[in-house]
Length: 248
Image (cartoon, rainbow, N blue to C red):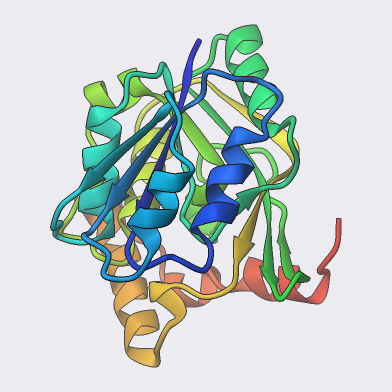
């Protein structure tokens, strides 16, 4: 099985090289890296050009947001396994993608996911231990970290892509859809897969936090579920614990 990694980016000159190297340094080779650039105006495209190789593909055009960019990259990808790595994130070590590939091949599964560290200035602020999914987990405030979430391309083709009408929670809705709504085979990697940079649209302002919570509640509705009472509170309880216990 071949892996494709999709990286949406816009004006990421400070972190783009780190992201590219994180993929190029993996122990397995022939990893397709699809970068979807929203027409950067800094040196992002120049950095990509200088570090280009046969497995790196670039789309540079205006998009309708990050999830539209992800969808473009997924459709353009030729791999059997699709992962999303944002331009300011990196894989935890050089063997991660081999372990992901082995998990898919050994277990014949549709989904593989693991844990992440959320870091700032090389300091771990939060260790997000996903744990094993059980039906109903999303209703208790649980969900896996999307940067460490891999699915086969066939899953996207059969069950759909990211909803671009959910600008802050399309990844949450997609994971809820393929884990809670559908009965797909998954494997949990009990280790840190990605070091994710602290920040992001959903935590950028109080307004975004409120709107993100509303979209998560809507995600239940569009999949035919009744959202849990006080879900906006439930979803933050695991996060508080993870900030307190910041190391594996």
